Amino acid sequence: MEILQVGLALIIGIHLVPMIAPLKIGLQAKLGANGYRGMFSIISLIGLGLIIWGMIVAPHIQVFEPQPWARSAAFVLVPIALILVASAHMKGLLRAVFRHPMMIGILIWAAVHLAVNGDLASIWLFGAFALYSLVSLIFGFLRAEPPEFEIKARHDFMAIAGGLVISLIFVFLHPVLFGVQIL
Image 1 (cartoon, rainbow, N blue to C red):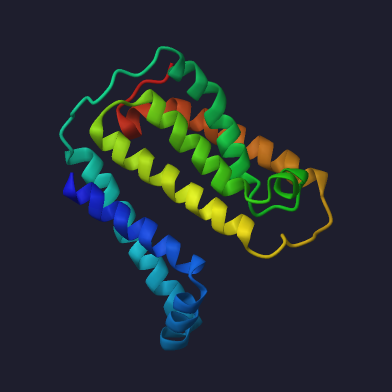
Image 2: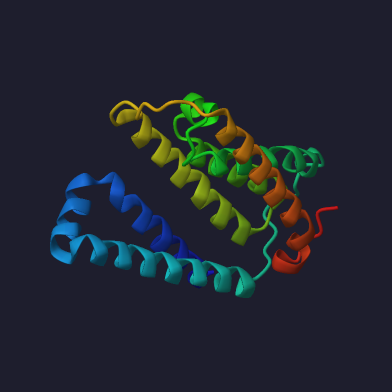
């Protein structure tokens, strides 16, 4: 479980750095813009690798029995979450309305996976991402007003199509990648 926890600490820790402006500015001044991006990327990749490895080797310790409705909810809510994540860097109505669609999407994804999985490693994984997304949302809404942009309907269409395609791909790859049959 420690490998998973270290991976989560690395990936979430490095993603918290941009929320602390003086820390980010100091690191960019020391490392340069490219050095900062490189450090950010390397730490993120190491964290992701440790999370994957940690989930593979984590013992299965069942903490609670998932509710029967959770699988159905996941089947509906995960595509919505992926659509929101896809809309995060587009100039569509979804981004304008939700302001921080990526963090809302991650929160939905994490919360529904918490409901579907009752084992300790999943609680660590999805609980950490849910907590991170909540903190990020709070900081995001406290920061300055969102950037203004001209709404482009095609961007919403692209986000919806992309989110649904990714959802469909994950339906079929989920057993291969994560050992869990969805259908």
